[in-house]
Image 1 (cartoon, helix red, strand yellow):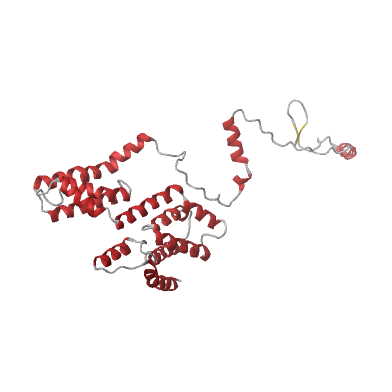
Image 2 (image 1 turned 60 degrees about the horizontal axis):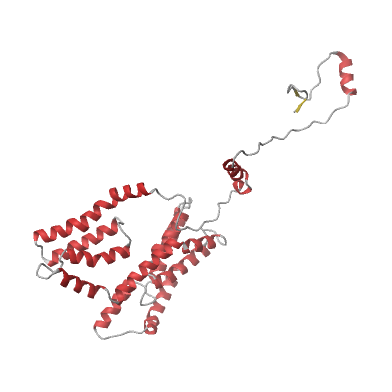
Length: 313
């Protein structure tokens, strides 16, 4: 189709029917002109926004069928929730549990004169409520326990608040507690910096998500993370959660979850600082004047972790 006049009429490449053989002979004698194809023209963008939209629509990456590589999560994102909406969500979802635990429970304990055993049980219920509703991070919940015990007079009204807080803080801040709190803080740092997100994106550039090699490397990384972090499996699952939403098969998702679970169990006994269970075991052995060195612990825990790994494989 080519334009033939100033008025925009189209030449359809067909000769007019003039009738008779003369018309056909004239058409055969006339030289045929090559058809010209007019390509569509695109106007120059009028603003920077239009130019950016054009580059996004017509870039080569927009025609690729492969998914884009994973990006690292940054501390600040352009899609953050507005501050007003954050406060509204906090007041509607997290405000009532915090009010119940921080105000109503201590008031109930002091008003009705409960026994110390009942007060301890209510404090445990309060800590469980804060953890379930995710009112604050886990290490903040752990630090909030002595405050709740002091305000609630967990040892009874016979002791003053100063005496109660001294006893609680003296028994709370020991080596085991500091190790647990330190591991929780490290978990928060890992999650904020996106270290495991970078690891998973690097692995996906080399192996497919459904491959056995990817599962093996993820299990080794989970085992290594859980050997030094009390809740390393939570960090690993948080990094794998966006990948599981990309339309994977149910069998592949189950395989990843089971692999992370078994690897976390194997790594949680590898070192004395690997989990709260090992820390409590060391503290109980220390109470009976039986101390274990690092190498004596690894001499027992290493074969156990190796056998569990062979069993899973």
